[in-house]
Image (cartoon, rainbow, N blue to C red):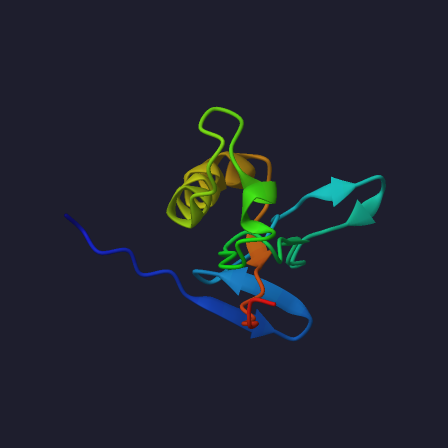
Length: 100
């Protein structure tokens, strides 16, 4: 299996992926978007809830149980589809907290 080697750089005010500007030659509503890095803030995309009082709030409809591994796996599995729509950046938040 060939190893992927993606390189992200900045040239002036443009983002480049593997040496080419993102959204090369594209516009959106008469605005040039070439070189921009469109991003989605998905802060709760990967998390677990160890608090027994609130854990059940996140249960899946098909199982009734919360599964943090499933949550992460489904998040990662959806990435190729988002990429097809032009999303090349995702922000996630990693924060800890003590169950209260």
